[in-house]
Length: 246
Image (tube, rainbow, N blue to C red; front, side, top):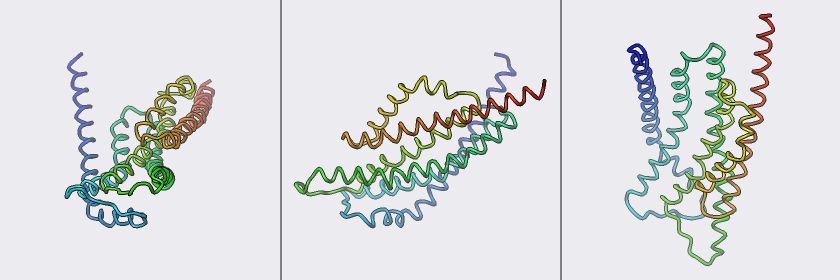
């Protein structure tokens, strides 16, 4: 490797480090802001619960507050992190690719919020109700604050990240890294991976696994459909460009 290539690699690493530092700075700022309002957020989350949450130790509530503030900070940081990533890859993209990549930043944020909302308002109540029904009034139900919010986190945050799959697939298709034909070829492997993910992020019962697996598989199929749309549009643009040069 030549000295010029070494300098170029070092410059890229320095630029990447700078972008990561900026992202971490945004995250810390949003984390501190979230901590200022975390008690109000906590009260709104537990206000309608039909049971009381218990604390087993003095540090439990601090852990819960940190958990809530971290999720809020991640959600708030996501648009800025996406923009910093766009700035990092911008020099290697064409003008059209830059515009395309920039357009996906709001979509990533909205899909993340959509995934969090799906987990919190739809999936979480269904799974919690089912698990509570298993006791059938034979046991005294006692939920600790730490375990309840850890369970809530497992039911929401992964979906915030996984719901971004369609936007990521569309973006990679527009750049030519993947296409719908490849996605269809690896469908069975993707299904297997998504099933494993659903088992890992849900409680150990069959209903929870099914309720999580089905949306993930539908997300993958939606990603293939969206990839087809982007791929066909890309081929049309490429065909028109080629025709104009003839």
